[in-house]
Image 1 (cartoon, helix red, strand yellow):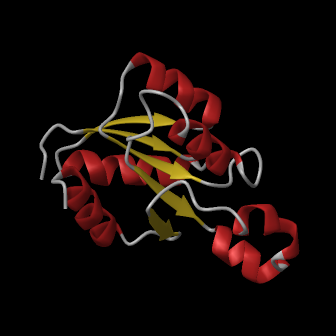
Image 2 (cartoon, one colour):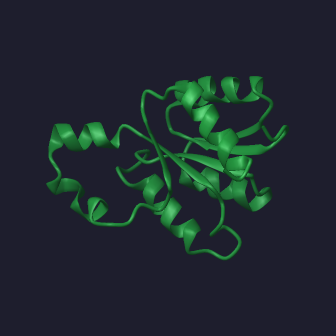
Length: 134
């Protein structure tokens, strides 16, 4: 594990943010949090993290996607590792794919996806692997 690696955790659910922040900090990470895309951009401008964990559905059903796509197309952020957290797949199952076709037809802007509720051990293993270059 890369000790003191900086992680930006972006989720509009305070309980998820707080619980993941505690887990990450107990495992040696320095964590900044943001409750939406605007706060995340402000954090990114002040200090570049080593990795970002990003919820998809915040103020809108695609706010996290929009931010991830923007970052992947922005100089200086295109190589930022992003792990997506989502209950999006459950929402697609519940509401049907038509409403989300513009997302489903896109290449996802991140390689790693964790569905909520998150298995913290698997998330930590993935973070450790990403930061170790695996």
